[in-house]
Length: 343
Image (tube, rainbow, N blue to C red; front, top):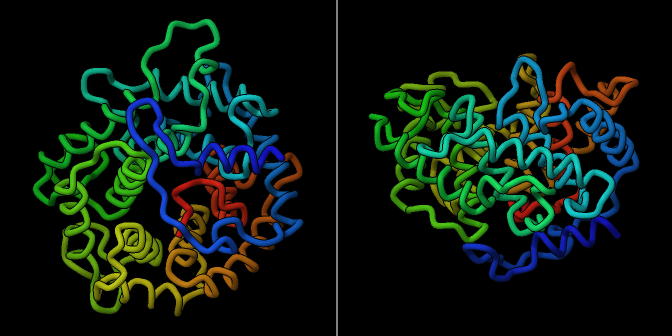
């Protein structure tokens, strides 16, 4: 019941604080999914319990990769499985995380630290929470800093300002960087797409400029350059997954670059990343789901078992909140409650 209630909150179109949520119809079997594999439920239950105990009193998750983006990844992990952000067992965890992210924002620039990578994931998470969270409950006696909508408006402005300073029309780690890479650009783009889906204003110029960078970075074989703005150059499978995902979400499935990147990841379903494997699972799952549902089903069956075997006795996956949150989100398409997961 908690999952159905949250799904209704997340996916019912209507006027919210400063925007409207716009949805497109999709096949119910894709939208709601089928029976959730028992292993997914077990992994999620134990993983969320660990994240809840690992959260600091100030609402953040500490560790080597700490920052607003990691807080956002952990926040999305709770929302993605249908946890009620207002009255559920983890409502306090969710509200603490949102408050921490809003407080961390630079009020003058809109920057969500500690890098534009974090900024992108924080935008994505707050956009997914927007409309589901009852903001009359959010601050619990504290003086509100700003609404989620105001936070996202500032964050969008920061992304656009940062892009305007960048000679590639994209993003790198610093908001003042003049160079760019496809990993950070993909993270910021997904945050902007989520904001747009939530009814917030994101300019076509910002989206189109970044998508041009992604297309220029994609080679004919579907490989994607990490930086430099020119296609291929032996980029990792991670980057091909990112390019395929943003191509699908931006409705660019007819482009040669999208078709090439999708073909590359579909032909490498058995590929394993030894560096940041949870990052790879996160992007690969979404890219396959958006591009080829049957390929995702094959991939998912293997990854569910893999993550189940990786999970520690205490519920953590890997050694940090980042690796645990990303690993959970890599399985979250089994639930399909977040708007960004719609096909």
